[in-house]
Length: 165
Image (cartoon, rainbow, N blue to C red; front, side):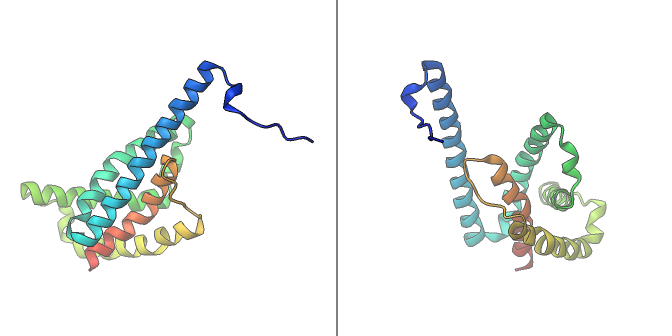
């Protein structure tokens, strides 16, 4: 069979405009992803003691966004997977730390800090970190789902690495 060649010239004005808008959105996601990577490297290298704040802010944005996307497809039950459980636990601990730092209020989790950190370290640097390689997660900046998957599987390990060292 002869392969049909594609040309933008064959598109009508409405199709060109839709394609241009799609590329602009991809460009915006790509720029945001590169800036996020640069910010992550900067925080990890320069001030790792504050990485938990970056982690908390990103989780507060990406987890609800992921829920909305999954709910629209009817696949929200995927959000009960092990990797999400590990991320929810990390988010709750970061949120409790943020509350403790800003207000001085200690939650009931404070007495379990040592056990929670050891358990979280084992989960994050074990199954979550290995799943990046196992599931072949790739950092594709213009696909927010791919970037979120890398975030969900890799950032908890980076977070506990910052706590540990």
